[in-house]
Structures are given as C-alpha cells and as structure tokens.
Length: 332
Image (cartoon, rainbow, N blue to C red; front, side):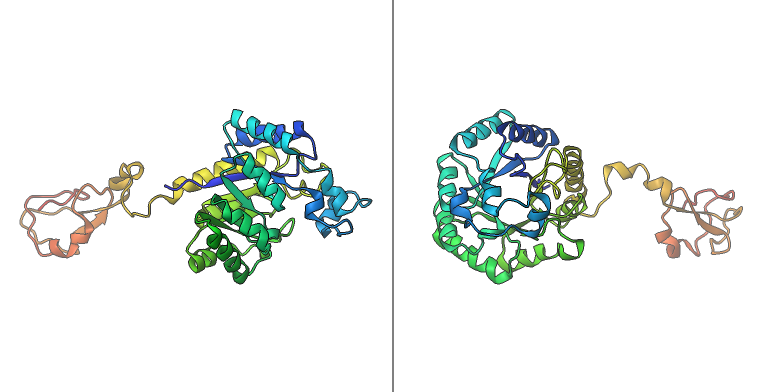
C-alpha cells in the first residue's frame, strides 16, 4: 500500500507573524500531515514595484497597496526560516518551502532542505530551474497554467542539470478553482507522457477533490490551510481551516487503505458471510430414496453450506441416495 505524502500549504498565511506560523505548524502536525510548506522569497527579486495584484488578491487584501507591498510584509528572513525548521523538527513534521527566486533557493539549500517544491509560476524560469536542478535534490514540480510542452521543457532542464527524482503535481492556479476547470484526469496524462510520479496541488474549496486525486493515484497531495478563512491575506479564503484539514487527512488515509493491492479474492472480513449469503442445492419438496433428481423436485436456496448451484447440471438425473425433507441440503 502506497502512502500519500500530504503537504499542508501554510504559504503566506502566517501574515508575517512567527507566532502565527508556529500555530499553523501545530495544527498541521495535529492533523497528521507529512509536511508543512511555507514560501521563501525576497520581494525585490520576485516582483517589480508596479506589478498588479491578481484578481483574487485584490478581493482578499487591501486595495491601497501594490503586489510588491503586499508580499514585502510576508517575507521570512534567515533567522525565521531557521526557527521554523527547528520548530517543525520538534513537532516531528517535515519543513518545506517554495523558493520564488534564486537567492531563496540558495537560502533553503544552506538550511539543508532535501526536497525543493517548485511553484507553478517558476515552471518557465530557465535560470531558476537550472539552479535547482544543479542541487541534485528531490523536486516536486507544480504545473498550474502549464501545457504539456511547458512541463516537458522544465523536466528537460531539471534532468540535464542533474536532478533525477521528480514528482509532478497537476494544478490549476485559480483561487478558488472552479470544479469544471480541475481536470483531475490530467494527472494520468502527465504520468503517461513523462513516466513520472504524479500528484495534485489543490485550490478548490472543500476537500472532495484532493480525496478524489488520492483515489486516482496521486502520490503527493498539497492543500492550502489557515487558522481562519476570514483573516486578511491573499490565500486565506481558498484555504482549509484546521478541522477541515484533519478531515481531509483522515479521508485520504482511508482511501489509501481502500485502494488495496488490486488482487480480487475473498477477504478475511467477508469470509464469515460467504455461506450465509450464497446458496446451495436443496430439496424443493419431499424426495424419496431412489427418486430421480430433477428441476421439479430441486431448488436453490440459502445457506451456502451444501452443494453449489454451479453443479446444478451435474446433479440433475442422479438418484436420491436417501429420503430428503423439503429444504434439506442435497447430498450425493
């Protein structure tokens, strides 16, 4: 049974507060996820001073600030990264972060991260991809807004730069993602096209889509979460609250067990019901010894302790070896 690697995406839902970030780690740990992921960036390296905010960001944040101003106050410096990594260790949960610029890639590498999560927006950033590829670490690649050609190009750069262990996440980069745009079957398309492990990064409202992704074979699931959806910030509204996160994890773990190994056989739990639910060949009426067994004096009824009805044609025409009362199991 394969275990799905579940990432709770704290992202920038810490709102710049180290204490809020630690509370998010606490909730992720209690929910039973495998990793909690933040975002690493330097505003000056990520966005121009006059770049516009996305539509969903305009709705969920102050209209009086630029995208630069919005993300500047959400930066995590080296000390805060170190503090959060140590706190994750104390909670027995993996610390991950998506770097959004080469300087942040170097920061995370210096901090000893073994897995690099590439956000969707960087899938066409050649120098960035070459830098991560050269580290020869595990890579999880999100593919929102991408075509198969974009994915092929990114994989080629990562592999030619030295990276071999790559999981590709299907993703739609709209917050929240409309159900008609999810297209979960694209996971299979990606897997078949590039012969890679696949997963799903979810931006829908609710938990049913990531659960479905697990049922379809996702090896990694990523989902935004927050302490409170009503908080101000770009991602809170499209995130899960703690109880929803816990429920999602429970459901995915149940799906893992339910998928099984694919072998079709009698299970231990159902074996006790086999003879109760199945049927046997019985006397349809009283039968005398020596009487010919026929469709007129035989019937098929529960329980299934006797001769299987699959032997019906072999029983017809035989002589009764003794007297049988109505409903008695036939013996030959």
